[in-house]
Image (cartoon, rainbow, N blue to C red; front, side):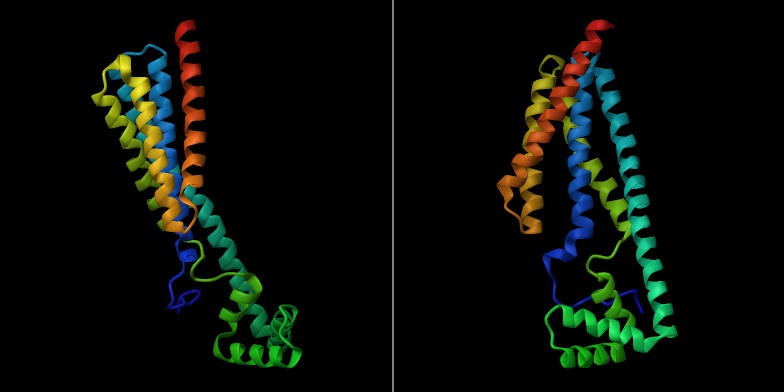
Length: 233
């Protein structure tokens, strides 16, 4: 048996695990790589040096995203596993008290006491751990932590996002590089915001403006820093 069983009907919330990692990875790939390229370009570095910096940022960023997602989501998974183990022990140690606890949860949600007790009895008879995981702990198969999925999704989408400004930089003359990379990266960020919102069932234009604003701010700040450092050096 898996930790929790999946409901047959598909809902948007079932996409939370991979969608969050995918949007974060792609957004970070575009913003960080474009900002790095623009910052290095603003320092008057050579075109080849700019591309090396961008490629290094892509590899380092993808590995950092994978490691960060795996570690953070693993912590969530460990917490869920520990809670389920504790609940399993409590069910073995004092099932009547756990049944009463479940009935009290339903009663607090508005179910009358008699019906709540019957529901608790029936759910406990079918799968006591599943009932307590879902209704007491708030853990379900749709939202449970999946570290490997999060790590691979983040790394893959970061790489895809970072490739866009890197390839644009490779094909753009150095004198136009900051302007072209900034404009196209902002366009990609807007598209990413719309796609992520559509997949998640959210208003698209608000999401697009949100990611474009933060992307523009990051690129402007790194360009300013690159200009200052380049002048000083």
